[in-house]
Length: 282
Image 1: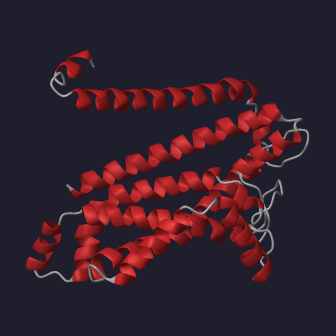
Image 2: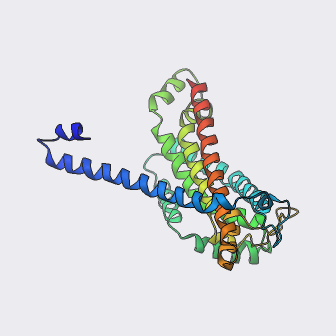
Image 3: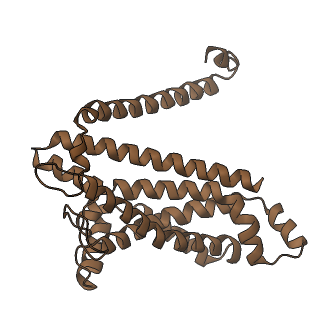
């Protein structure tokens, strides 16, 4: 860092900005390490096999049903939101006329939806899916609510990934006689896969960590429902419920460790898949 600063002697403003940026990185890393260490120190000693029993009761406080519900919620939400988000982004970038007012309106709407608090999504899901459509507190109602929450995120990240693909790729494909549909799916999308997967990873993190919206839609039943029309709690709701009661704080810390490992594992797996797909296109 000292060597780097020497090159900024004639540019004090650049040196100041470099110091600020470096300090920001250090603070971010330290905060992450503090949170990681705090969770591991308080949670790892309380991990035990009874937490992974097939059924939840007051004797074992099993998180296994919540883990299964979390995976189901994530898969179902992505199944609904990913095709819609990617399809919308493809239309906005590849088919809609540039400068179209509709495109600007859709982008503004997506950005607005991204800034709405999750509790508002929860209230909407409760009023519309749970009450108006008669789904009740269920995994399906929660998944539909979560799909609406993550749809703007997936759409915007996919759109940016498609825009980042050079137009020379498209022109070369058109020059070889390929149509627009073939160009999109055989040339543009494979090149944008890393950016698209980044959006999916962020969406997974939001689904796994969401509590407020799912409290009003999926419910808090500590069990594995027979189907997606039954109620069930996710890991984040399970952790919240245990901590709120005040009697099982140790188990809530252990649940936080499992949740953390799950998120890190999903991110690592997604990054591995992205690298493999990228190498396959080279």
